[in-house]
Image 1 (cartoon, one colour):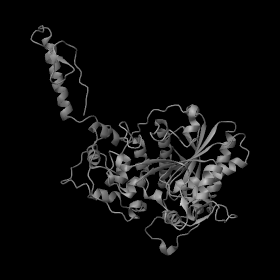
Image 2 (cartoon, rainbow, N blue to C red):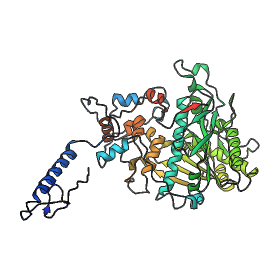
Image 3 (cartoon, rainbow, N blue to C red):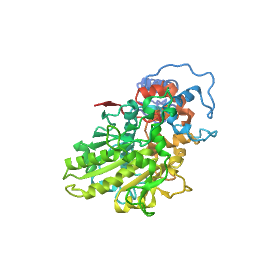
Image 4 (cartoon, one colour):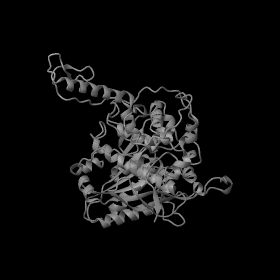
Length: 512
């Protein structure tokens, strides 16, 4: 802990309490003695405050009784187990993947209580926005983000974090009203973007009645669900900073049982029904089903995206435009399918000028199609794809290389993150934490470059990680959170407040 302790200037020897100040010497005049005595008293008082009193707390402290015995790092407390329980959290990967935790050691600790306290607050501390107008195409992927990823450019980091928070908002919009198959009003974390349309994905599968549990909510097995939204930057100031008007298409990951079932349909099928040759671009059957299947009362995800983007391109005809499609997990694969179709549709239509460039930002995305699909997306369609990958995330490696058919990742650029680089996460963080979107954004906020230490001024709150990935957060942060009066909510409480099953946070939505 460090603190600045000041004293009035005087001549003499350094004070033992503050080497930057001086104390009176025997030769000092008697007029200077009262100042020297009062200065020393102030130093002692300051030292007392530093050693005894805690720093001011931005969060209200609720006094709780400390546990009689602190559990070991590898043990799960009752709070830990309750934070992982409940129906919503049952969809988390930790309940589906047969991995066991290995005992780990908290090797790193925060630099100071004040720094840890700042990380535990929920208030956003965004880095300053720099103008990217002169190089916006480079930041949007032209040239494959060359020279921007390693070391990571600070302006690109901020853009990626914003898109990641957009996906968090999509998770929350779903889990705030999971059963509502209707358009809703969204409040985004970045008010310079305005949502223009809600998006829904429908499965071609129906969960049979015998497989439904009576205690399960109806939305868990519903065929059609809110999956994301389209938004456009309508702040003229932000348009000038970015050098163009950006259209964002945001897609969340898996949340319902039909979506999980579609994930398991991994056979490759042609993207178009009239081309079944061996060299034809192909995609995963389940992903294509969710992308192309219309709902009972809503169009397919494919039709809704194309229709809304065409409308916005026509609305802002003559302006410099860009299209950014961002998704996490399942949403990352749907983003690639949308980019492939949009690029073809916009190139064939009348856009009143050059076709807006399309970029895909993928967080923790699985393989989506074969090599022909990946090559068409990059070479023929001209789509820029940036894959943000946690090296410990098993989802980014499925389907496995030994699969019967040839899956490959689409796109050229990759930003590789590592959970072990974080001073907050345990070195043995499990697969659920490695795939969690908030963990991705935490690592992204601190990433500076390969082999480089975690960013010293990284300030993204770790309170979100504590809510659902508490067992993967180092004990020093958990204990400090208890001192601050912050207790991770249980899944039931968190969902009522707008959190989702996988610990994703965003902003609440309401029906229009």
